[in-house]
Image (cartoon, rainbow, N blue to C red; front, side):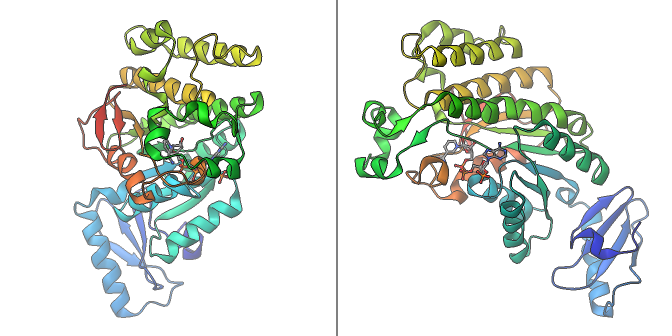
Amino acid sequence: MFADPSSFKQLLLQIGNSIILRLENTCAYSQVHRNSGSTHRFNKCSISKDNLKRSQRVAAVMMNGNQSIERYAVVTGANKGIGFETVRQLAASGVTVLLTARNEKRGTEAVSVLHGHGLLNVLYHQLDVQDPQSIEDLANFIQTQFGRLDILVNNAGATGVVVDEDGLRALNIDPASWLSGKATNIVQGVIKTTYDKAKECLDTNYYGVKNVIRALLPLLQRSTSGARIVNVSSLRGELWRIPNEQRRKELGDVESLSEKKIDGFVEKFLEDLSNDELEANGWSKMLPAYSVSKAMLNAYTRVLGKTYPEMCINCVHPGYVDTDLNWHTGTMTLEEGAQGSVMLALLPQGGPSGCYFDRTQVAEF
Ligand SMILES: NC(=O)c1ccc[n+]([C@@H]2O[C@H](COP(=O)([O-])OP(=O)(O)OC[C@H]3O[C@@H](n4cnc5c(N)ncnc54)[C@H](OP(=O)(O)O)[C@@H]3O)[C@@H](O)[C@H]2O)c1
């Protein structure tokens, strides 16, 4: 099993009762037994005595209390933007991270960048959250390689609109107007909702998250450090933005919320969209599908939090971050944008669950 170090892709992995360690920029590999703490090197590598000693020293530190080394995380939609930065920060804190992306080239390139920064504890795996087979393949990979999962960050997102980017730039909307909703009427000429885009958005931001969680839940239930699920949401999904009062009340009543009820809202939204009745039936005019997808994601997070009290399951607005998703209208850096997700991914035991965070602060749904 340990015969060929190259098969471990320059990684530090835990397999069964052993940890495989490769020191950065060296050929030094150690196999460390978890129970006895004993180490030995691989025959195939040419290892200098110094490197072997260093490898064994690092391995000993890992075995004696640096628990983060034994945590495994998945981040979805992580080839760029906030997801990529979330992977970087988690890996820098010692978590072994599966950087997932729907496109292999974009995903492996992103991993190479992180390897270039010495973060060898990042692995690529393909994941299109709209594709059931892709989700199943990821679950099987984690089962085979790690046997469990500790952290899941559902970060992948789509906007549900077609945008005239030049037209949008020409409007030169100030960030305050974007965030408060004041720009809603101004942008209608350059941001269009189509049924296909709206469907793609809901299938990614809501159903995609649900399907990934459903597939990875058995692995999260085997977490030894306490499972953490982070659903990356948006302030667009906050309840006060929902024009229809009855819907706002129902979504805000956690006691009566259920997955079935939330699915029902999504189906009603799509029906109203296809009948051109969004405004008449009290759906948000600003990025309607995106707003609905995130409001439903928040509601679903609350249901999950109640159903699995042994885990910490939260949703987070990352801030208004400069990324492709908002056509680079955002004002915050990626580093700032990933802080909320990373904090929630690394919550200590007994941390909050079923909550909504505005970046790192708990906020009103
Ligand atoms: N930026 C902000 O100001 C802001 C504000 C509030 C919330 N958010 C949320 O933050 C999250 C990250 O967004 P971002 O701003 O970092 O945007 P981004 O840079 O555009 O990244 C979005 C990521 O999602 C991926 N993705 C889209 N559909 C996917 C699918 N079906 N399967 C797998 N991956 C898919 C994209 O992959 P491709 O490269 O292949 O397209 C990309 O990696 C999203 O959930 C977004 O709603 C962002």
